[in-house]
Amino acid sequence: MPTVAILGFDDSYASVIGGFADMLQVANAHMSKQGMPSAGLFEWHFLSQSGLAVRTSNGLELSMRPLPRDRIYDLVLIPSLHYRGWRLFCQFLDSQIVVRKWLIKQWEQGAWLCANCTGTFLLADTGLLDGRIATTTWWLEEHFRERFPKVDLQMRPLVTEAERLVCGGAHATFLLQSVHVLKQFAGKAIAMQCARSMLIDLTQTTQTPLQPLIADSTHNDPLIQRAQKWLQDHLAEPIRMKDLATQLAVSERTLIRRFNKALEQSPLTYLQNLRIDTARALLEAGDLSTERIAQYVGYSDLSSFTRLFRERVGFTPGAYRARFQLPNADLDLRH
Image (tube, rainbow, N blue to C red; front, side, top):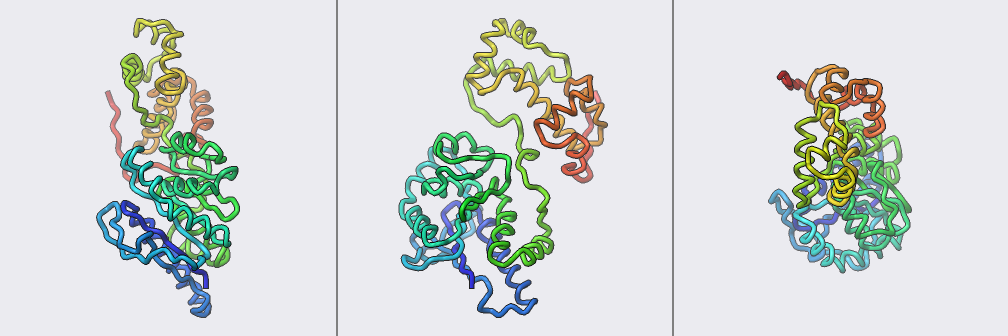
């Protein structure tokens, strides 16, 4: 009987805690239907450090058992937690000494550790990911790299595995992670049956098409704020960095230096990413032709636009629209 520990913390996402257990229940149902004796089915426990109930991020309270000292599980899930700012998140991580030691012991005794989204930080805090491949949620990539420089962080895959350490990107990857570990404990056939019955798309294996190229970046440089606003307002026009610098009454060299300092990228890269992100939104939400979208974001040469789009996103514009277009979208851009 594979035993699974599902950890809970205050501010955890209830959907990950409950959803992972639901996947185990679905696996049990499929195995029972195929004649598997009950002794071979998954058993899972919801655990917290104190054994007290946890209050999840949406206010739902979940009953928990205390971390058992001597029991070793086959699989441990570290769920994602609602992020309320870096300072508070670091305080949470620093307070998890007991849990970290417990996780290390579990892994050293043969358990698989599966961490989702922000939960990957707690797994990385154990030191077990040092020198190993991992992934995390895209919007905390820089914080992860700064806190865990020894981890081989890969932001392209949705799910990574290295020596029984499974990491998932943003929150919803727990579904893919559950299928991944089901293959290990119940076999590929059961895992695929679970994926089909729960309508889990297994063809999406990379985070790239889902990541915005223009990430939220807080800075206090008024010059760069003016530059960003001007680029957004003149997106469809031919833009030279020399003209932008003149518009802002600074040298091109100063503009590049200030951009790199504030946003860690050149103004040209920022402009290209801004155009591609805008094109993605148009492809998702409307029926404009690819040619019209290219013109709307400042590209008169469709082949150049298509080449850059595929380079940054991993799909051609047409393939991206086919995969990610919102149903019944109607975006009116007439002006």
